[in-house]
Picture 1 (tube, rainbow, N blue to C red):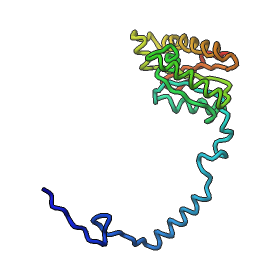
Picture 2 (picture 1 turned 120 degrees about the vertical axis):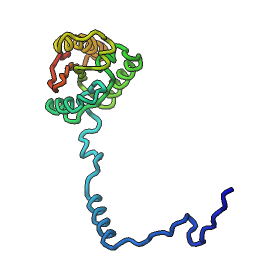
Picture 3 (picture 1 turned 60 degrees about the vertical axis):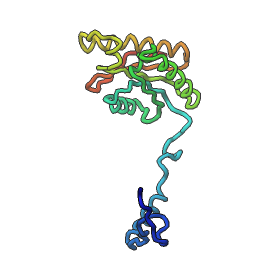
Picture 4 (picture 1 turned 180 degrees about the vertical axis):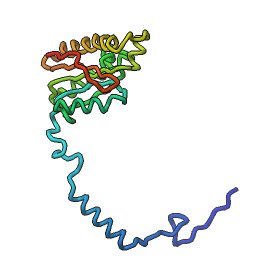
Length: 191
């Protein structure tokens, strides 16, 4: 059996005495830092976010982290710097076929509807990429070359684009294939 320990009455919260000593210079430094922070605008303030109720596009990409910087850079070059909603699903356009699960299709349609309703988007941009693991599961045969791989993706990208235009004829749909080097190739633009 463990023997109870009696703590002194002056330390009712535990075993260690409180340390109320704060050097004056640390206190003053903290005040100065707090004063500077109070003067800075919040990172999520409306001034920093622009028109928070309107995005220009919904972007659908694969979950593959290797292509994020390429995509963000490309979107910035297109004048969309952070003016888009983002959905990431394994395989990107392949996800609209219900691969690997039907839930991906439902998720995409739900997110697209919300993006259009809440942020008044005018277009959808889909990025597929080279060396995609989801596509490798869907098509276990190796691609003959990079162009053959891009052509295979292009057929799924165009199917996805057609499905989007069928439901939302007012949206422009842009389809892209990204190479491992970061080269972004336009597959098609619908609408």
